[in-house]
Image 1 (tube, rainbow, N blue to C red):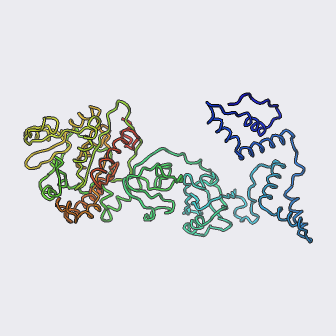
Image 2 (cartoon, rainbow, N blue to C red):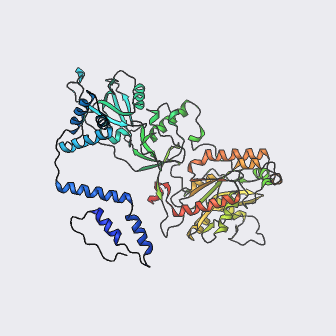
Image 3 (tube, helix red, strand yellow):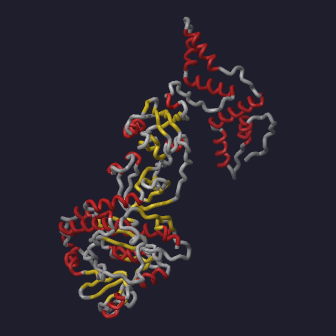
Length: 583
């Protein structure tokens, strides 16, 4: 495209070089598009201007220019003052307007800074009217620039001296970024206003309402602490928290609101009562306060002693009603709802097998506060994660599971259940069910082989641990639909279950209540209310262990959403308890 490179001397500037290159561009048949593109780039006016500026700067650099004077700003001010003292002609008025513009003043100020080589920051002067009691103390004047964001610090009153002390520095806030304010510093003035005798809430209001430049007079701590080292502790919140409803928080504006199942990064645990944390994937880089595990547990125990305790905070809440279970064959419809509630009974022995695994946090604490988590992705050759579907009344999770497996039977599998009912003519042993006698079933129950079992129409049904292992060992993603009580057995590092809560979209079903299709299914207003109550109850008692909530609007969209989730679990890192990743 360029026949020959142009001859250039050492004095040729970039602007001239660019012009010569552009002139040498000759498009040919093979590179016509490239040549047109290069010509359009080289012909850009903005690029040409940049090249000219570069050449001019290089010329001045070679000339080694020296400033004519070191105080152009003062000279401009003197000239402006002289012009204002007399009658002005048109040219003089124009010159006065130019000298008064902020842009020209800024240019002259930059000129003087370079000429004087005075590049050190200018600190505000120390006030002349220092208090007598400060004369022998080290006073630090700190000037910060903040917009609408909080200062990022909390204060407290020292009980012994009455001094206002900086209690915390929030990671990522204005105070933390400045590096000039430290925990333990004594705060004396804010923007020239003494705050010694003001209440902490009044001082906090002054700080929050201050905009732009804010000047603090500080008595530094005896030994200024190093900046907090950011930790890498991640927690899954097991309860909802609203700082504006928490009277114990040292500063409600500094609190971090979060919802159950939110992932929190704890950046500081220096304070035993209030940790500093950020929500993962939150665009706000400033840390905020959350109650520590010890503090939250301590006050929950106090609430239990003093009065009724809300069920969502305690794992000892009444278990989910096992009568609200779909038909094990997945054939539940509107007409079966009422009868099935009466006929399906989950066996509850009240005792677990001696070798039965436990949920990691089940015995460690009586309260649901936080769970330490980390990101995990199955490695090549490792067994896939178990997929557990739990569903409230009307979710029809067995049907959803069967459709997902039918979509990709090579990748997805199920744990073949056991039953004591007679085999039908079209059924094969080990395909639809494992068919065993009632005596054998009872013996397996006593030996703890089933994670759950139930009775329906005088026949027993159950899902065994062995059948789950068999599916996973085939390197298939095993889907099981279970009652939440089974999570006590399955929620371990051995299975690493990903738990999906399926709940029906009650609002859509209400709209269809008067349609002929809904009436043919026999779904009544009472059924809808019971389905809604079932979903709320399951979420209240078991929602803290759920990884994903699937709201089932219709079978087709629910299946599509489930397939996307299953692919994501195997391809993208997911948050799991740290004990699962250490195994």
